[in-house]
Image (cartoon, rainbow, N blue to C red; front, side):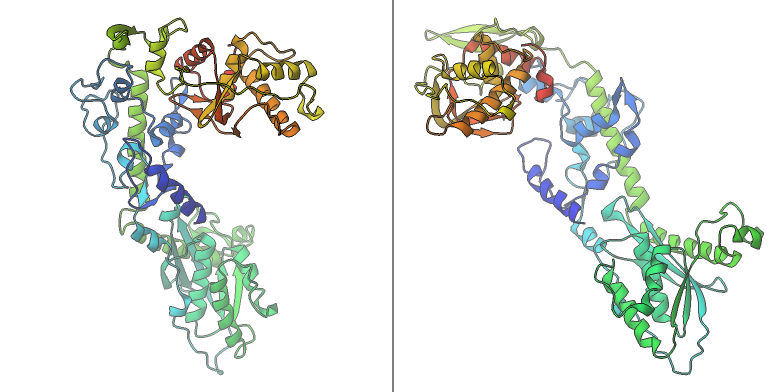
Length: 549
């Protein structure tokens, strides 16, 4: 329960992000239904890729539709690549487009919240959730009073509890059944608890049976752990607080103590194994065959009946509304439809890819046209205005900053031995940070990533010994050097700013952390090479930056 409520608290702010496919939550986040299709898709592949990868992308709204590509200049038009008549949005694709290829037809979308149709993210109403959190109250049971003259010979009953959809917390349902020696139903019905399990359903069946009993009871149960706990009642003075379902056990023990004054053994539990020789009718099972499983034909007969009646109580709840099988089946079908659309988007060519798009660039108060190359043809040799177009948040114009601060860090200071930085590499890195080519502007709004510093390091012809020449290795070493410098000297810092562990994102995400509060004057050539790598599809994870610059 706590896991689901914590997930809901994470879901609420995620719904408020500025994304066109995300809508504010109106109910509780249903994690289990949201992930329902993963179990069906996990072993299915298309073009060597698991379908669960496409399902994950649909959950977070990462389907690349033409309206998005058109907005950033990657296509010439936003029209649908399948029908060609409407703007290609996920809403159009999942609901309206008549030309989605493939054998799958559009199913009906269940009403599972505002984010289910587009993302397959399910919610459950607060009313349904509050019903799920109900707890069956033993104080509402009518407890029979025992006469001092009752017969002390116990009556034999068989109990069973059934719990379905325990893997879907908000949709878990439970039922119980009590059967007498004539295979007649003494009682059956629903079981409610926020921690509902088969154990809980079986315990509730015993609580009901003992409360309504008019004399000593011998209960036959197939839950061995429960039998062992209740058979400890004679030696207990109170129920240990660490026992599960403490309230129910305490209620049962209280009745037990009261009735113990009338009968020495008011409640006895016997274990009987469940699901024995299920492929053989009970009346064809011999006593010898039953003894091989440490049971009797009578136990097999009545346990099967109790199990069937408990499952019937569960089925009745599932049929009372859009729950269980019907809910899960319709949710999975719709999520498979979203995955089908995602695969078609991935393997169907977009509308005409952009080759050249003109942008207006001011030159001496006159407008001149510059044509944008396609991303695959993009190189560091292209003009700066094209880089500004693709990455407008990057600091391309550095003339407005003074970049006056330089480091006065002492060259005599040495790193700790456990830092694993060689003397030669330490001196090279310190020389880099103290060089005249690396002047800094101090401003809380500025920041620089270690990856940007690594590219500046490489394109200013600094070299390191014993370290792979890659953005990943150099950015990692520069970060280690800054860490050591902070610990060694505070009055004359090596760099200005606060180290941040996250990724820096300004249109494209850069890995390996960053410094906040300052920025050096970086050479444009190094920034261009870094931009090209990102625009060519380099992923933000540091592991993807092990190739050469």
